[in-house]
Length: 323
Image (cartoon, rainbow, N blue to C red):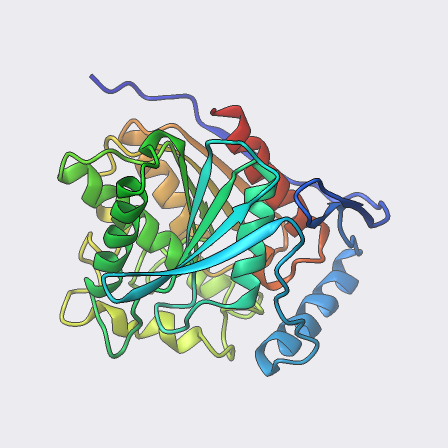
């Protein structure tokens, strides 16, 4: 019998401290704190940083950190990137499903974020899935690829209980779809589910789609991916309210313990709250953290900000506390 677990909701406040970088044993430079700005200055920084992101200015190429090895494997016709921390003897494994509105592929930012998360949670391996993209491939193509990647991990001898499944934005949608598939087919689920700004409603009816439309400098009005979430090509012929896409309508019973992170200024805020409430009602253990004044997918898009640093540290602490 399922029992409702205690829901913990937290909000990260703002304080003024200097950026402090420390070298980790895993070969990555992981900040203890990030850049903290007063609200007006912070929003000006976010707007400029978002512009630089969309135009490709100031983008640093991904460099494999010391102590890590990369191996690309082909699974059911797609590439899965395997990163191994040669300095770790941990059993934990991170499986990342990247965001991008189901239309953008794996980015260097996602690769670096996956390695940071893996290091912070003391995972020995991180896997990044290059699933097929819309509009050429619609539902369930990406889900089929995620299933194949997950089964590859199990076939390689990795235990489901050692997997932390992480997804941001569309990757969060895909991560939930994956665990729902595993549950419905009586397959072992990952131990933990981490969702960063997850896309949980393919419709545009939720309140924050309106009141945060101009505040969200990453996914709001005028941004390159705004149309992709208003007219989601991945849906194919499915209704946008179909629970296979709009997960706030799905039966979430039996899902793994999950952490949801969202921004106070993002257009997905309301649906993230509704998804959290639905999960709790369905008996799932959920922690949700709202980071004030942050736009969509801030940890990926604005990695130098203190809220982004704090969110990655929260993921590491969350994972460690459940092993």
